[in-house]
Structures are given as C-alpha cells and as structure tokens.
Amino acid sequence: MDRHELHELGDKERRSRPRLRIRCCTAAGCLSANSQAVLDKLKHAVAAQGLEDEVEVCGVGCLRLCCEGPLVQVDPQEVLYQKVSPEHATPIVGALLGGSAGVTQGDPKSPFFALQSSVVLDNCGFVEPERIESYIAADGYQALAHALHEMEPGEVIDEITRSGLRGRGGAGYPTGVKWSMVAKHAAARKYIVCNADEGDPGAFMNRSVLESDPHKVLEGMAIAGYAVGASHGYIYVRGEYPLAIERLKIGIKQANKMGLLGSRICSLPFDFTIDIRIGAGAFVCGEETALMASIMGERGTPKPRPPFPAETGLWGYPTLVNNVETFANVPGIIRRGAAWFAGIGTEKSKGTKVFCLTGKVKNTGLVEVPLGTSLRHIVEDIGGGCPDGKVKAVQTGGPSGGCIPEDLLDTPVDYESLTALGSIMGSGGMIVMDDKNDMVDVARFFMNFCMDESCGKCIPCRAGTVQLSRLLTKIIDGRALNEDLKRLEALCGMVKETSLCGLGQTAPNPVLSTLRFFRHEYVSRIKPPTNGRPKPKVPAASADDGVYTPF
Image (cartoon, rainbow, N blue to C red):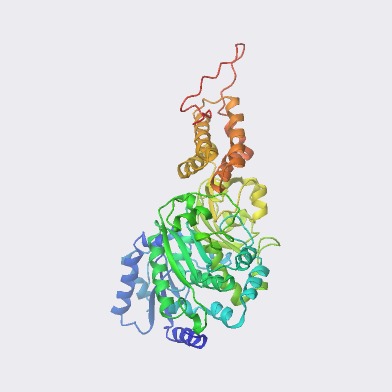
C-alpha cells in the first residue's frame, strides 16, 4: 500500500460511518464482566429496530473508568452508560428513538475524563482494535509513511531526540540516545524488541494499550526499525495477556497483508517483520538482558552490563529495547513534531505518562496526564480520593517503588522528584492506600513478591530478599528487638548496592520508603528492653528469625 492508497482508505472508512455510533468496551476488564454479550445484544437490538444503516455498534478498547465497567458510550450525544448488562441493550437502543434507557449513566465530561491529556491513549476507546481500517481512519500509519517518504533515518532519530521522550519502562533513559547508539553500529543484522512483559501488581497499562490500539505499537516499532537500520522485531508479551496476544497477531497479519509490515513497506525498499514471543510469567524477564535470553530460548536470567544491548543484544547483534508505551509515543511525535511533544510536561520529563490508578480510590482505571502533574491532582481530582477515610500514602513504581505519604502528595510526578523521595516512576503503577493500611505489612507484601520472583542468580537478591521478608515478619509479629530494626536497614543497603539487576537493586525501596516516612509503625512493634536485668542473649540463627544465614 502506497501513501495515496493509505489516505484513500482512511477517507473511505470515515465517510462510511453512520451518524450514530455505539461504542462498547471490549478490553479485558470489561470482557471479564460480560461485555461481549452486551456488544452482541446491542447489535441484535439495532437490527431488530431496522437501524443498521443509521447506527454503528462497535467493540472498542479500554474506556478507562474500569471500576464502572462494562462501559458503553453513544455518540455524538456523548451519553456514557456504566455497569451495563446484556438486558440493558434494548433500552439503550430504544433511547435513540426517544425512549428512556433506565441504565446508570456516567458523565464523560467528569473530572476523571476532562482532566486527562491523551497522547498514548488518544485512540483507546475509539478505534476498533481488530480492524486496521479503523486505525488508518484515525491517521494510523501516516507517521510511518511520512518517515519513509520524507525523512532520512538520522532525521527520525533527531526528531525523537529533540522531543525529549524518555523510556517509559521505568528507568527513563533518553529514547533518542538509545536509538542513536544502535544506529551507529554497522552490523549485518539489528533487532527491535518491544518489552511487553508487564508484571507489577496492580499494573495493566501496557496490556490495555496492546488490547485497545495494537497498531500504534506496531507502527512505532516499524519507525524505529527504519531509524536504526533493523529489519526484524520481536514483541515479548506475558502469557497472562491472551487478548493482547490475539489482537497483536491479528494486527500483524493485517499490516502484512496491506504492505505496512513485511517487504517493501509503503512500496519502498524497506523491509520490517515482527514476531511475537510469549513469556512464561517470570517477573525478572522484564529486565532487558533476561528478556533477550528468553527470546533466544535460554533461561531468563540477567547478565552484567556492559556490554549493553545496543552493542551486543539478540544473538550478539545490536538490539534496541523499548517498552510498549515508549513505542506508542513515536507515531504522534513523527506526525505532529518534536516541538509539540516537548511542549508537554516539564523541562526534564517531557510528554505524558499513563498510570493505572488502583487501590483505595473512588475512580480506578487508566489515567494519562502530563509529566509534572502532582500526585494530589491525580489521586484526589481525577481519582476522586478515598471512598472511605483519608489518603495515607500512594505507592508508585510497582514492587520496586516507594510509598509516598499524604503530606507529600503535592510532589510533581516526574523522574527526578519521585527518585528524590525514594520511589521511582516505574512502568506506571499507582496504588492508593488509606489510614487502614498497615505500612509494614505493605512493605512485606512487596518484598515477598520480589523474593518469589527473584531468579536466584545472585546471592544478594536470592538470599537477601528472604532475610528481609523474615525480618519484616518478625517485626509484624512483635518479636523484634532494636537490633533487628538496625539489621533491616543495613540489609536493605546491602541488597540495593550489590544485586546484579534492577529487581534486587530496587527491591528494598518499599521498605526504605516506609522506614523513612512511617518509621513509627515499625518502632511501635519493637520489644522494649528489659529493665534492671541483663539484656537477653539473641538466640542462634534459625530458619525463621530473620538473621542472615549463609547458604
């Protein structure tokens, strides 16, 4: 498909749409609440009323307000229905003819929606994820065509660099710098890898993007392939995401058929193919060297760096690794320009960030805001605050992040500010806790997660997380002494400084941040020293006393 044909197909798709459109969410969250049956019933009700030529019923991706699903929206009236069941389908269609739907309605102009800024999620809830024509009608693949026809590879990299885009996988490394590192190597082969191994508790950002707008990620990968000189890409996605995998397979097949992936893309001498590799659920495979080992059929364990993947990656060749959200930003930057993207966010943190707002908050779901937005604005204005009680803390960055107390919620959400508080951006998990949450128990929950997910390759992580978990249990049970609290802090420092990869290096963050901001909850559980009697002798190390025992 050449550029002219791409424009014609988009125009044809837009012209063919009826005036009225009923959008039903078919992302995993709403599907789990029976939204497929809702979609089928809506189509049947439209047909029963003879409205097929006037009303389009379509299954779309995530409509964001996940706590109220299944969600259905009617346009152009902008009527949002919440918690829709199949029996509501006929009344909803009847309302188009002047009747009353009698279904719970939400407000698509409420603060939850109105205060968001969409870049990554701009198509989510609008395009049909299993129809490439729907994506093309939303200017899909225009950025790829523009890059191939009007830009040299170096110009594409310059545009990404000037945009200020940083990797959205957690570390925040400048994307343009990483791309230029891969591009400068002269090699017989180069690879593009999309890291979709999202495993943080409470996180579903990448899953939602892949389920709702898979072609945006495919287009971003193809642009990256052109920029760095790669002809093959892999998407490494968790096996727990079957819907995302299925829609990626459909998308790749459709793009290949239309000449937007494969050989001679856009009728030009540029080839780029994409394959899917399914992970087996190991959290550590989110680390790029472990991920690449898994793609190559090896055990998914991290390797020391350098050399970095940009120099020696898959099968020894230069490899570019970015996550789902990073690639999803690329088409918009190329289509609308670096200056547009750089005008969003802060001086050092450009663009928007997608968060999964979960926990003790009224409005749970997907939130996209400019970087630099305060935590308080996200949690209270967009999220609606705690339904019961008061916000006590917000945990950012998944199991490797930190817990930020309520009195610091005015902190802007950017890479530097969160790091200064002992937390991280991570991939975008954001868990709200209220005054009923026990922060020591929260720290143990995340430590146990890291302990279970440790690959065991390095001793500091393999043994250290076990001992940290035991110490936290000892404190919670009221058996700990002051020496145990000191030992906990010292062991956190050791694990953080000496672990091989990011899992171990950041595993102590929840403990350290809760010690920093909620230390009284630890101290209140410490056994007081015995008065007037010799200090009790600490017993010899045992399997459960929290004392480090060499293996």
